[in-house]
Image (tube, rainbow, N blue to C red; front, side, top):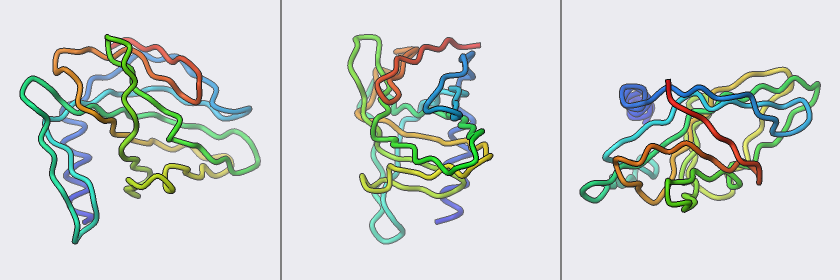
Amino acid sequence: MKLTLLLLLFVQFAHAQRTTSETYTYAPGVTFTVVNISHEKTAEYGNNRNRTLYVAPKGQHFKGAWLEFKNETSEDVIIDFEQFFLVDSNGTKHHIESVIQSMKFTNTVEKYKQKLKAGKTKMIMMGFWPAFNKNDKVTQMIADGQEVNFTYK
């Protein structure tokens, strides 16, 4: 499982487009930036015994977002990733399907709420479904009701 996640991370970095994102506020004292948007032909979900490989239909890719969160407060904060959506060029919201934080892979609804400890900075990768048109250059995300815009370097 760990080898699969390491390979997944390597592949994600290999096909990621760096963004120029402003710093956005998630909660008082908690900020985030969109670092990369990745695109992959396949996505893999499940645990060791029950893993499934999904292949995007022809002309489509799965997209992921790398966000860097910073908690400058003295208290732990819960981030609800179920409230994050990647928006395609047609305005369609794509829902979250997986979250990777500090090599902890989760893809169940009750695990979409992740704890960010006080004074910590974490890089978090999120996968979104359904697949996007492979030529769609996504430039918008909805994060807890807030519109987040970014461009590519």
